[in-house]
Length: 125
Length: 131
Image (cartoon, rainbow over all chains, first blue to last red; front, side):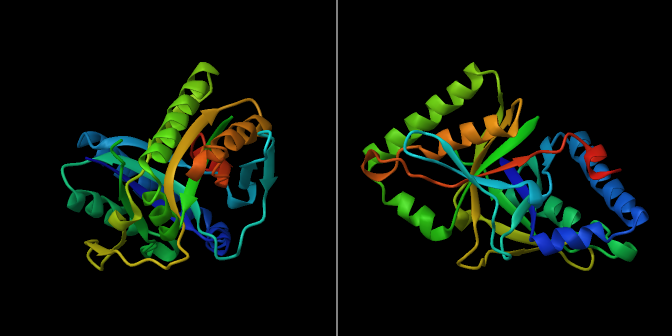
């Protein structure tokens, strides 16, 4: 079963991330890279993707004639997708366990970030 | 440049969607299939996925020992990802054009649903984070 693990954050949360030291960021990335490696070794890895900064986000709607109308203003509470992992696992519990590992990835000062990770199944159309 | 086009909605939006007639849903799905084909024919298609219903969503945090603690309670204002497309285009303007097309997918009564589509560049690697 395919699940997507979504990491999101508000703009304030992303700005907090910029305040991390280089060592903290590197240590955090090392954990995420190890998780990717493990998922690949277990045959559970499908894809992962990081997204650009929320400051680059636009909302687009189509006008009557299909002309794109873009808007870059979001409420402060808006949760931006920061990145995701797609995994192919035996059951939901395994997807939750992987999300737990990601949530436990070390942050500033070596403490787990404890970031909430949203876990969703794919739609079967 | 790779961009992600994201379609999101609140739980109430999904509930509204569940009330669409079979014909309206079919028209919407037909549009989405044609849109994916259009992206492929244009040579910009990378991937697309639709997600399960928000009722199946869980929020997971690590407990002290790293064990997963799941929670299925979300704020009413919470925007859930419904699905996305990743495309590889020449410019942001081209990405916005495709997003506008997706926004025009037919809704109730065959009218364009005018769903807002969030557009963001995707990172090609950790180098983009300055690492």
